[in-house]
Image (cartoon, rainbow, N blue to C red; front, side, top):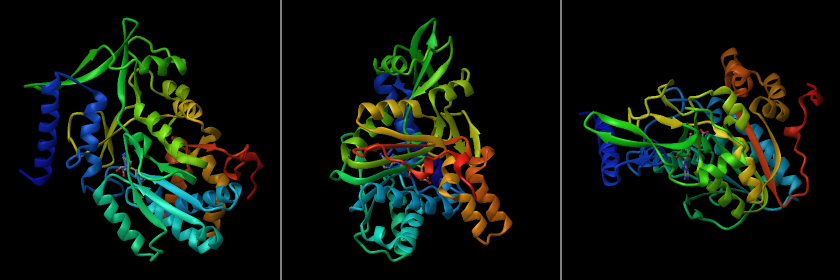
Length: 382
Ligand SMILES: C[S@@+](CC[C@H](N)C(=O)[O-])C[C@H]1O[C@@H](n2cnc3c(N)ncnc32)[C@H](O)[C@@H]1O
């Protein structure tokens, strides 16, 4: 047995043991173990997940322009919040490229901001943390500029900040519950196991929070229609708001408003697995070896954010956001080969990452902030 197969088997045994204890587990419990088992979970292993040799691409990996434009965004936020000491908290920094590009650019282009700036990385994966440190060591930044902290069920391991919480593809990696309408009754999908393998059971919901969720968002599931609910996202946003004294939250992710999600996915839901740049729905295969992810429901993040004290600054597509931040000028002014140009275009092209990725910006304790990145596109000339 190869090491890879052995890890998959150990994870499988661990999940089966949990199922045997309870009879069945929610899909969210299954997904949490598959992705976050401390040793064998997809997000806690030393597997190459992102990029050519991994399972999918993320924007920071595509090109440094993404991080540089976010650096520009953060500098604007720093000015709006009064040019005081400013802390950026990045959730799930993965390979560390976003942090690297942001810090590198701020140091080069905005020295006054750099002097007032601190970066906190919140990352669970020990291998990713090591890579992040190595990458940052290569640009020789001051020791006190970046620190690593944790996020667990009871919240973050640092004091309240003045600054910005930033995440790219963090929320879509959180475990989701799966719900379905059956004979006009809301049912939840559970996972069980017998000698033939894992199988799914529809049963009563594990918490009444789902009914509240669907009611608040005015979602009416049709017969057999499936949807995913990400309760961890609302808990996370609550903790974010607790720790944000004054500033912004930038959430960039795969997803849409609730209308968009339901329009696009008639009955099947949005849950998918990614493995070596292919998509599948075999959730119970390749355990710990493939990603499992669902679209982010931004309407939900907006609603729970408001309840937690976060106001909406704006919500837009990644294409709009990057164009308003100046990606076209940057592309025009940079001497790049055709291959690089095509890569950068993928960040904002509608058929690339431009439409499916959205950007939600929320704020707290700031009076009606206006960000250049959210201005209407027709007002932009290049
Ligand atoms: C899909 S990856 C995105 C990586 C990176 N942001 C990018 O865009 O390339 C999700 C990241 O979130 C991290 N993560 C998930 N849950 C976490 C938690 N509770 N605390 C910190 N990091 C977490 C994972 O380890 C992983 O690095």
